[in-house]
Length: 283
Ligand SMILES: C[S@@+](CC[C@H](N)C(=O)[O-])C[C@H]1O[C@@H](n2cnc3c(N)ncnc32)[C@H](O)[C@@H]1O
Image 1: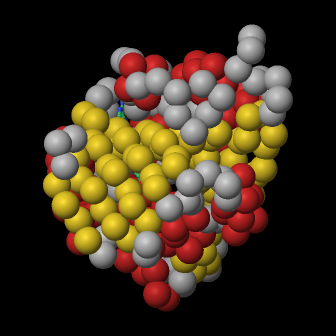
Image 2: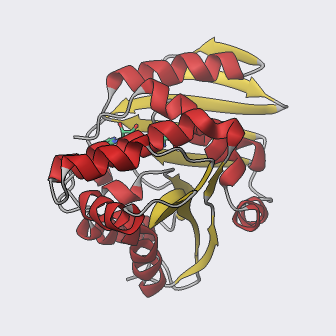
C-alpha cells in the first residue's frame, strides 16, 4: 500500500508545479484548445494538486473525476479545491468550482485502481491524467492502462514520474550505493505488483507509442535549494528509510548518508503527454 501523507503531498505540490516541463504543458494546451467541454479523469489524485496545476490550461467547461483509494486524501482534496476556487458549490456528485472564468464539475471516486482500473475510469473520456503515479505501478498495469486509454481514444498526460536519477550536493561517498539501493526499493510492490519505478516513464511511452499515440516528453526534475530545504530533508529521509527497509546496505551507512549536510539536490522526473493518432481506438 502506498500511504502518502497529506503533509508530504502539500510539501511537494509547489515544487511539482514549478517543475512540470513547459513544452509538454504547451502541447497539452494546444491539443485541447478547441475543446469547450472536456471530460478528465485523474488517477491517484491525492489532494487534487494535478487538477490545480492543469485546469488553467484547458477549456471553459471541464468535468473532472478524481480517483484515489485513500478516503482521507479525497476528503482533503474536496476541501483544498474549494479553498482554491473563486467560487465553490456542492453538487449531488461532488462540487462545482469556478476558477478564472472556467467551470469545473468535480466528482470524487473512492476506488482501488489496482483492482479495477477500467470501471474506475468509467467510460470514454477526453483526457486521462495522473501525476506522480505511474512509478508506483507495474509494467503490466501500464500496458493494460494504455490499452484502455487507446480503446477510449483518450489523451494521456502523466507528469512527475520519477526517472531513477537523483543527486545531492555536496557529494557523499555513499551516494551511488544509496541511489542503487533506492532504485531497487522503487521496484517493490506498491499494490500493483513489482513497480516500474524509474522505468515507468519509458514504459508508458513504449506502450502508448506501440498503440499509435503521438508522444511528447520532457524532463521535470525537482531542483532543490535553500528555499526547498523542507522538501529536500523529507526526500533524503525518505530515501534513507526506504533503503533501510530493504536492508541491502547497513543501517550505519544509511544513517551517515541521511545526516550529511546538503545544500542542493536534483531529483529526476519525466513528463509524458500522449495524443491519440488517427489509427487509435480501432484495434
Ligand atoms: C505520489 S501520490 C500523488 C498524488 C497526486 N497525484 C499529486 O500529484 O499530488 C500517489 C497517489 O496515488 C494514490 N494511490 C496509490 N495506490 C493507489 C491505488 N491502488 N488506487 C488508487 N489510488 C492509489 C495514493 O493514495 C496517492 O494519492
